[in-house]
Image (cartoon, rainbow, N blue to C red; front, top):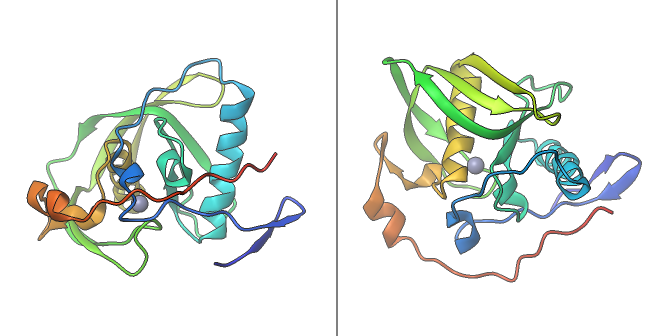
Length: 183
Ligand SMILES: [Zn+2]
């Protein structure tokens, strides 16, 4: 497990990993205004995403089944965004099939068909609503994170399509995972 110097502390954030059954939870809506615990969770998620060199991370991956995810596709770790209670309101007909990995399934890949362009409605930390269109890598990342909110994983896909059978045939275990608090 890698460690990183973040916010002045050296801390290693543990992720929920496949085949933990927690990753199959359908996440719940976040209530506004955000409470302190949720604000801390957002900071925690951003740290975890950067620490594990991910471009996106859903709350369920750090042990909280709430509908939010962080994303930063810039690769220089300087532009974290948070998306709360997101819904995809529009998507392009054009799709592209490509291999995807997931921080919660190290060493595994899924071949996943995604829309090239999507329009997302979401709230920011202040509770302000946004509707924004995303393309290419960001669009793929968002669709991947949206799957996490529904308990789906990229490794459930078979030749581009979501496979219920593959999902069901996967071994489910309960781990004693517990999110570590940074407070
Ligand atoms: Zn993932």
